Image (tube, rainbow, N blue to C red; front, side, top):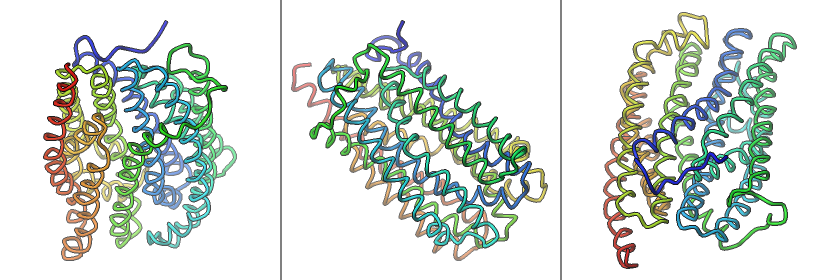
Length: 451
């Protein structure tokens, strides 16, 4: 019995939703890895430990975001070769991707372990938080190779329409993560070190489970030890799509470092409240990201199969879904934000500080769909470099400029948090302006092949 699906036939709204729901749950569980760390230390190890772990969230996002971006390039190519039924290209791409992702994961681990303290100093991390934050990162970054391999496996299975197995594997790893968090912190009294160690062990379990599936399956995208070799042409194709996406995610995180530096100019209560509220960002973004992966996967398969009419529909339907879920989650967080923040801290003052962020961000999340879904659509057509440049200019550079102009002038939390919706709006307009002629050109190319 197979969990894969043909994305080139049948009802697109129904298939995209069926594809995305397990992926949403998978993404939520990935977020829960870090949220469980923060919740456990906040409840059982105190506000200082909460601030230490929370202060690392942007750096964790930077590295993991890079890996997810690289995996998105794998996803697009696998989907395209599946749609075109190019089995030889598919086999070479799968095995080359596995090697590339592992190498990238090892490099990121080395960089993270070696330079984590320097990163925290550049961030302006509070003196009372830096030792705990450094210890957390030293351990957490050891899990980067596992995270790279899990995201590789998730990209392959998702491109084939199998989003249920990654959910199952991550559910097992997520349950273990929570149990180990509680054991290490409450029983062993390891505090920050305990929650980071729990995350690393869980990440290696999820990587093992998904790789075991890829080696066991008889599907065309399955892995075999005898085929594990680097193909130069496939490697260049993967890097051409994946690296711009990875750098895009990383540069977003770098721009957010300047935002964190702005937050760090306030007192420790604001920093801790921001750390708790920032968990909502990952929660909402990763739910919406399920529809972005659906967009790339469905566009990739239909483009490979030369189904022109389904390519644009895949984008529009994914955009509608992601906007809707962003609006629902955002408004829900505005209305129930205090209950959400209470998961991470019992301190009423810290909760109120966190609500300053949620009240602004809750009405902003849905806008990001126009930017991110359009980027995913361009990537589904094989275009990654220009969308990345647009993001760097429209969102990242803009955010840094905002911090040093608007925020520097007003010096208030709302003036800092409002930069998100403004940067998303500007970038979305530019991304759509690029996508429209790009889409028309690609469709004409298909027409020229007599389709």
